[in-house]
Amino acid sequence: MKRSFYWLMPLLLALSLTVSAKTASSITSNPIAEARLVELSAELRCLVCQNESLASSQAPLAEDLRREVREQIALGKDNAQIINYLTDRYGDFVTYRPPFKARTLLLWLLPPVLLLTGLVLLWLRLRRASPPAPKTDADSDADDDAIKALQQEFDGKNHERD
Amino acid sequence: MKRYLPLMIFFGLAVLLGIGLTLNPRELPSVLIGKPAPQFELDRLDTPGQFSPSELQGKAWLLNVWASWCSACIQEHPVLNDIAKSYDFPIVGLNYKDQDRDAKDWLALRGNPYKVVVADREGRVGVDYGVYGVPETFVIDKAGRIVYKHIGAVTQQVFKDKLLPELQKAQR
Image (cartoon, rainbow over all chains, first blue to last red; front, top):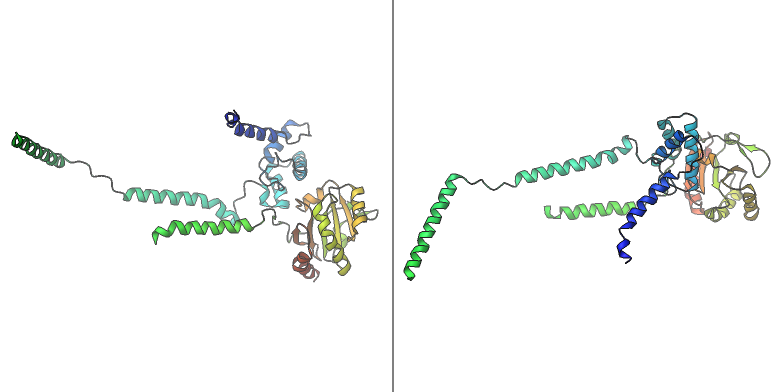
């Protein structure tokens, strides 16, 4: 009985996540600014509960940082300026998309390099494994002769037994 | 040789991930090291008036972020009291997102190691210093630059091994 509802759990979990993401405390009445706040803070990490975004976190620090972002929006700053404002204080860790620079080179380049290496290895291996030689006419003639020989041998044996 | 390759890759990964497990993901390096300490002007809790870091220009000092609601602060407080007794370095207490009344009661009960106590009631100065939890302690040098940040409670060991050498360097 209980078990039959297990499939609902991931669904409910997913639902609760979307609901909490939307509840990023709205104080300002400006819906455009609020939409930008939600969009921006979904890209930013809450430093207290590190795997939660600023949009979904209820931690007091996340409240404060949303307030800062809201104020920056009100000041007319663009998204890049706001993210800079936060990374100047909290470092690149505050964004979920680390910038591409010398320190993050490995982070960005390793996955595609590994994928390419894997594909090249796979291709080399597939090419080396030689495919079965296609049947030629000569082969099939040879087969026919062999079959005929066998047939005759078989018939001959049958006669002998009679 | 070739047949041991997967095993070697496995052990390589295991060692790498094992090292990862011993690191503390809560300790984020501060980006403010080497940068000028952000300026602020906040109300004092110990005496009437305001305080700004520029008043300590020319001295090495500690900025300790604390709150009465923070349990690790209770743990580190005796250490701060000892430091205040034994050394000349001024300690400034940044009372982070707290009620003034609670903070004053807390200090009356546990002793006040701070030369100056300021109230960051909304945590705005905390954001400028990249604070993401309490307690945190900054070492600020003669020129007003942040030279070191300790995250979590200050213990005798931490003071002796980390803060004191940094303070002595910062004083030079």
